[in-house]
Image 1: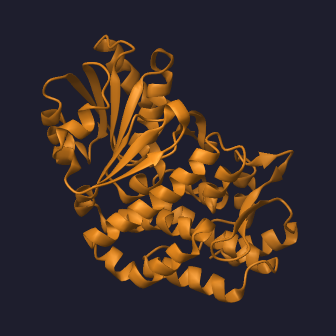
Image 2: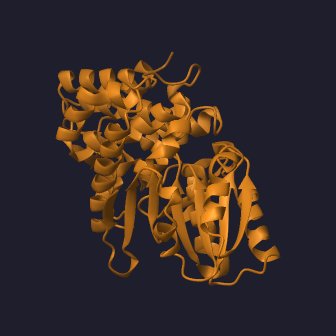
Length: 359
């Protein structure tokens, strides 16, 4: 097992990475402050891992709520089921919520914890690659709105993150690729050596080599933990972690939540950011080719969804948390491992990029 630390003064917490961590009771229980626990999971994960966690917590008053699975259910309406369960069971402010599932469950559980009685403890047990390397770390919690993704939420840190790599053995191939998209992101932002490593080891990662997956998770989490520690509330450098997300969130919203997986949409979004960076003369053509090749090797899409127009992209991108004074601020690149935040790009070049990804 590897242990990393997210350093945020009194809100600091550990990330545990390793195999069969769900069976290690002490790892989980030392981060539960009271005797009351609510596990939030979904219809896919519950049959696989809920009983294991319940067994671990047999000395606690432990209840569970099972939500429907899918990004389309990441709404205030479905979140209300969590609040209803908390109130029905008369849980106090000493309750600990446990998020057992992927990014949707983690985001919703964290937001519920931030809101219930103005804030209770929660723990992340991510069961997908994407949630283990990205959404479980850093305290971003939210639900979606029909007009925009993750527009209703809060920054709220967990007590710990327990990333059990054995849960990845039950992951669908498409979900594995989706997670690898966020792994690749860290190499593109500020870790060119990691990008090189991913080029050399993508075949092994796709084959679910446990040692390679554990290393990829560790390096991704370390990269994210370092950024979050320096900018918890995304006032500056943390915005770099949104590489590809303005384009990608437009895809998710435009296609209807759940039709494209988050990592699939972000892969195309990152490639769009690379394309615009190349058109601006900031990124070498050879870097763009390497990025596209790595996404292809990870079985990720490299074109926008069929039927999605550049006009639709612009409309949806204008409803984004990174819009300032009516100008869309984008995360772009000077090269692999050199991400920048900029609104100093050509509107005509952006239009060319959007049109080039249409099909």
